[in-house]
Length: 292
Length: 347
Image 1 (cartoon, chains in turn cyan, red):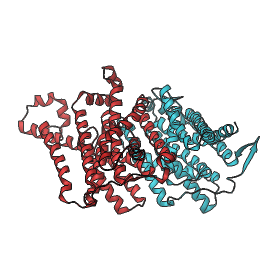
Image 2 (tube, chains in turn brown, green):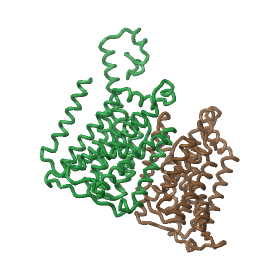
Image 3 (tube, each protein chain N blue to C red):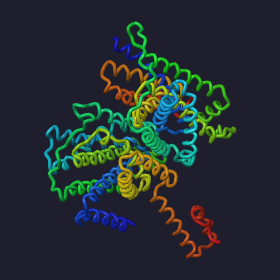
């Protein structure tokens, strides 16, 4: 029982971070129908940037987030302009899978040259501090990470629901053709949307770097989790991604704490297959178009 | 056309069979072994990714499943050394197909991008299992296979010829797909699955059949590879780079063509080995590879063969039109031809 509750606590706290990563990915899918296989690599690049800022200038990873998100926003826009925009519309969704896979490899190669392949971690001095509540351990840094993710998701929500740009994004997700007819510049929305997805990856990356040691190959661990989450939530649904992130991360934490950590990776896949059996469009997805 | 095609195929395989008899150096035969491996896997991938339009990103998982099944058969004393493992290859294909069928049944219920997601997730799950199931796979320590008892001077030959055979099987299946109702059904699935179902194509059966045949072939290549290497590690047996190489080769040569994947494999695997050799183990290799990939996707999204074919057809049409002095009425009548003309018609 103790292990179970501890698993739930850990899972929910970690789920917040995954929610942040996955929200960017599902947003990119919603806008462009592009499954971004480079999202994991972008998260790790964000983690490396936070690491570098901490090591070189002593900037706390939490405070570095505005800087890293700006850099990654630019990276995301560049990737969209250089590699995704030139694809022809009719085969964009199929080719974009492969193109973003190649981008992931490109980023991995770049990271392993810049920082070599040994594992890095950000040692702030507070990463091991924890509170004990009713006998359950709550690591402070995980709690902060959770709260930060909530704040970032809140910002994203405001951006999507309270601004002109957000309205253009939502219109594009719901019906790209009508949106274009009504004067939404879909190319600009696509570029900025990809940048926004990369920016959420950067914010999540800072936190990821605090929680786990990472190297350039770590994005492979992330990508299958992120993909299961976005499919479970319904491709294109940001709210769905958040709920799915918490579900997936909690159940895998429970499996890790009660059965064995080796099998927790399996949880993602099993959940994914079950969801596809019962509800192929995901929890909050619609059959035709994504919903935000 | 068919006779010419038959001659081309026969000639190609005659050259392949004869090649090792010319006393090639070991590194050349070794290179050819890898080229054949990738040519077979690309042809196999083409059946699903090219014809049916379901881009599987999980084929490397089945390569690994084949490799580990072979290793486990040795450890369970099911197999002796020598040529026996080659005879067991069909069994390994069946194992992989048995694993592939439920995955295809579930994941192909959705669109192509979700299928890609499920297969890539499957790939990483298999990799994690290969690392974690230490009692079975040896974990990151790897697992050893008996060293094949072949003469050192011609060590590669048995593997080489088995792979030539597998490539022939893969290409025959592709040829069958190009000239049969099953192939037609696959193309219909790619073009518009709902309409295909509407006109009575047994969509699900055809898709699952293509997927299981494809992963079966891939697993056999994995099994040959593991026997050839005699020692396998999870990160090489279940490697996302294998998936991406296979996909890239098919795209480079031309999807849904007979020779495209083979051509792509001959160009890229040779190039890749050179790149890996030149740039060593350094990560510049990864960057170079990714850049090649991106350039191919952006410059030749349809692949070499379809692009060439179009060029040839256009030129032939232009010549026919010029030579025959076709009356203007006829030119106007065939709208399609007019569009295809390179100069937009005669002056």
